[in-house]
Amino acid sequence: MIKSFFRNIGADAPAAVVVFLVALPLCLGIALGSNAPLFSGIIAGIIGGVVVGLLSGSNLSVSGPAAGLTVIVAAGITRLESYEIFLLAVVLAGFFQLLFGFIKAGVIGDFIPNAVIKGMLAAIGLILILKQFPHFIGYDSDFEGDESFVQPDHANTFSEILYALQRIEIGALIIGLVAMGILILWETRFFKSHKILQLIPGALVAVFAGAILNQVFISSQPMMALKGKHLVSLPAADNLNTFLSFFTIPDFTAISNPVVWTTALSIAVVASLETLLGIEAADKIDPYRRVTPTNQELKAQGAGNILSGLLGGLPVTSVIVRSSANVSAGAKSKSAAVLHGLFLLAAVALVPGWLNQIPLSALAAILLFVGYKLTKISIFKEFFSKGLDQFIPFVVTVLAILFTDLLEGILIGILVGIFFMLRSNFHSALLVMNTGNNYLVRLRKDVSFLNKANLKKALENIPENTSLIIDVNAAEFIDLDIVDTINEFLMHAHLKNIHVEIERSDCKPAHARLILPATIQPLTK
Image (cartoon, rainbow, N blue to C red; front, top):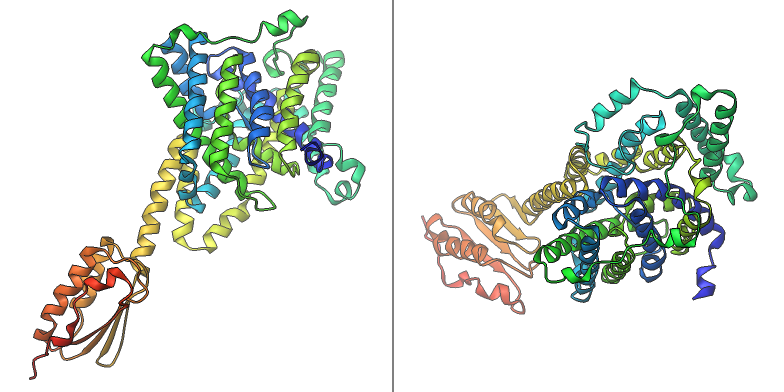
């Protein structure tokens, strides 16, 4: 176990640093957006990294507090009128997720179309670019990690950018550009060819450069210096007792409150869906194409939420932003996720003052870079080349997530994907061919009632005085409506002087319900 943990440490440790830098402001921002104590987001990040990371079967997924749960968390805290009671709901949600894992509910993730998953990744990339741009130029009125189109301040994703362009902080813009330049340099062939440089994450250099540059502004150009809301704002503890005071215990006396149970179930369902989506997405961008056992993941998330709730943390899920940053940074195993959680713990316990010197614009540069990698133009070209059946669900998913939120957008994308899947099945299940007066109607796959109208029209269009072969050998399943349609045609085919033969397999039960037309004699004219 220990040996395997350190097997890829050369790649995983630098990646963990990048994920740590990405996760830190997101944990704080999501806690702020959820109207929860700031430290609750850090607790969830630590638990998501260390506990879920160790128990998960995923190699690259990273868990922590998720923006998709902010509305549910904020509403739950308001309804329960106590954060301690809300924590009890988080603990119970963890037990629900354990149950989901044991009843093998993870199979749900296997029914999400590939175009929808890739659309989700591209949408997340666009959202990162659009949402982080204001932070990049120093407009920090909205909390880090917000992914919804309509924001809590009643602005939206695009109006926020317009406000930001009118309130550019020159110091933040310079720091952001310097950080972005460093990240781009780190991707060049020169830097990649030096192993020593590759051991140092470009994101870490970018953040240090941003912090140092801001200190230069403070000493020489005070008007350009960043302070307050433009910097990371981590709760600081002067001693161990103060640090321990940040942890909160659930109020177990509220166990009989029905609102606690309904809140817990809501958290469990939404967190499980986000996790399954996140896992599917992480597997899609895994360079080694490894497959995560989804039921094990639900159990890992359940254990993580139980512990997070017991310690005072927010609910955790698999989070695609952190997972994408992990893959982008070159992680190879789950060690990166675990190390990022340990880095969070060490940072808040030992050096919170140092972290509070980090400009948000430098961190925004990192997320902009991750966003670009997720939503390259080549991805859109790839799906366009696959045809409209793939391209339309992909684009609809992107737009739906962009203009609503992650879960609503995914549901819309799935519905559109299912429509095109049924449409494809509708057109490909039936083949009609003819040579002169000889016709062939072949059922090429399992045929449902959705193909009834198409089959009925094909049979009605068979001309008089012809021969017809109905070949059903390739179909294991034939819906009763389809059987009835074929049998009705057989009973009346002689009226049009159509000679019919059925090619079927006596070994397949579905075929036995078809009438044999041998006794039906066509009329002669």
